[in-house]
Image (cartoon, rainbow, N blue to C red; front, side, top):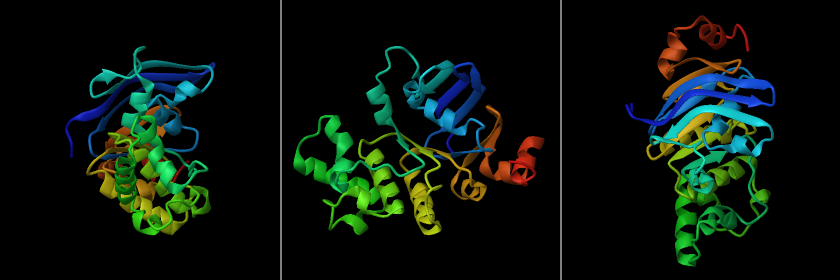
Length: 253
């Protein structure tokens, strides 16, 4: 396991208007590992993951205090380049959300916005990203098909390829399999296991079996607090906190 935090969060608080959704969260996220967030619905997992690439900036009446450091630099500093931040910290959402364009144009979208125009270069990036997302063999003969015309599981892997195409360092995944069938879910889980060789991955999941299968570390959220964070093995076999044990054993949530 890595000893070097890629992301360091200290005393992070977040309000939606008057409602405090996160209460002084501290967390280290380590390089080239999968960190899973578990906890009941509405406990702050998705809110928290969106603070890691400032997606909450897009929500009205949000106030954030505390620090989130990526490679030692606070991403909430005024001069932060949000385009560059979101290039480094990519995101995959719960519902597959490909653009209503061809498979090729979905994956080439990010590189084009960052100034890559040459077709041979784009071809290379598109193929590499689709291979990394374990979907190249399924789509290579019809890259001009509309991405909305393929199955949900394939759409989600196109969205992962789209996120990978700009060469991020961190990949945030907010319940990436909750809308998918078991076979597609298994493919995404296999993919996550491969991708952590090259990327730092943070994953919100409602599925505790999934967290235990794919993650190296797990953070348990409850009512806007992190109750406990540790290696996944320890959280699932010998948690330190009573609330964690109650949740893992299905006594609530």
